[in-house]
Length: 234
Image (cartoon, one colour):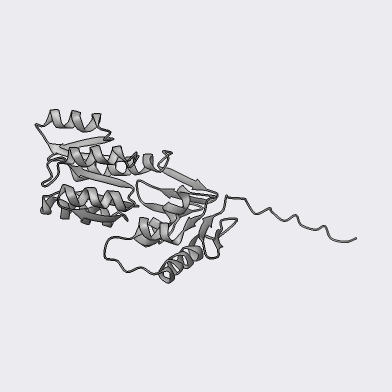
């Protein structure tokens, strides 16, 4: 999933970016409000982490403009510990959660996971699809309780397909959600990621269908019927 961090403290932003990337998210960073507003107006994200004290346009104004465009993007606001009034204004403008600085990185990551799940339609932290299970908190996938060795990109691809089971996902949508600014990712690269993921998860009724020229679809699970032994002829 793709996250935008709008934070002018570059040390804090760098720490958040590194941590979230290690968890398998695609992360982009902007340092002032005008950049944040421009990015949110033109590109697709799954979560916004928004510092309210941004230069050149306040975080509150970025949030106000976002909601004025009828965007339902989940927003986690960051504020100074003593800025109760700003937190209240942010929540009133449509923020989904807030954290006061300084904060524990582990708590922020937990809130990020919860907001990303909520933005994808809610649901439990553990997604099941036949013998496949994906733990959104631990970022681990299993088949028949055996852990799969998946790269961060493969985990991201699996999460997107699972959140849209039975629906078409275009290559362009996959690039938007998986890739950060400056990454040169071709349609051929997406095909490679899908091919690698197929080899690891397509068992016992799990299938990623290719819709030529359009994209991919994780088909709704249907268990493979067991074969009945044929009685020996007398």
